[in-house]
Image (tube, rainbow, N blue to C red; front, side, top):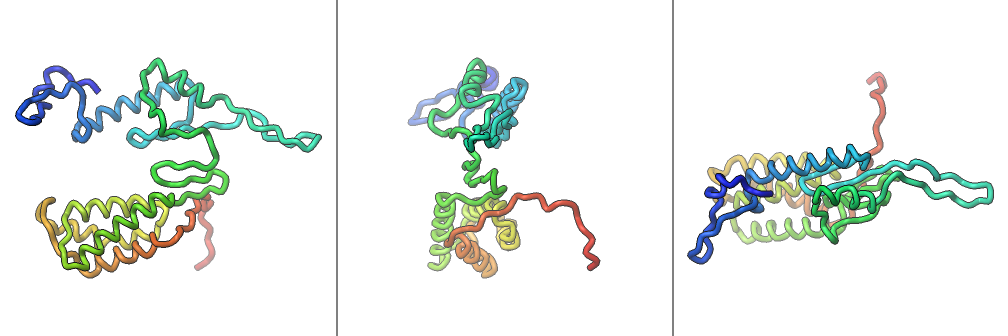
Length: 236
């Protein structure tokens, strides 16, 4: 994202004794995310106006949906007529090309009923979502490192506490009952006087982290996304 020329003087970096001016927003700049998000939102609005989508977006990860316009029927001879759709990948690339959208050359998948998005495995047919094995193992190893350090008597940094809290809060979407095991960690984070401080966590925090480790050490059951329906009075 180009930087407004009068603001470039505030984006100077020093490397090996030399000074360089950023002409575009650098990754990690707090104010850059909002600017990039505005442009991404505008691109989504334009693609929606072209009848592509619906589109779900989180930062720079885009998820396109489409609905069948025909097909999906069993013919008299026993064969199955495949579904037909109003658009596909070719249309998305073709219509977004004039906008200059820099789609990643490798991080993409064709339309499917089962797909990975934001580290979760979504199943549109069964209406379920679960954590991918890749992410499960990654987060398990992250917990093991933290717990091993605590077992050696080391203190936990505020940065590590916030990092693991963010990770566990993210996956609590597929493990809803895990939210009950985040309160002690959140309370512990609030006790840090500054983000560079180190503290010994309470035993309740260690116990909760061990509970999460036990959950991530085994295969996870998918979470159902099927609507529960209207509330019912069962006279309790």
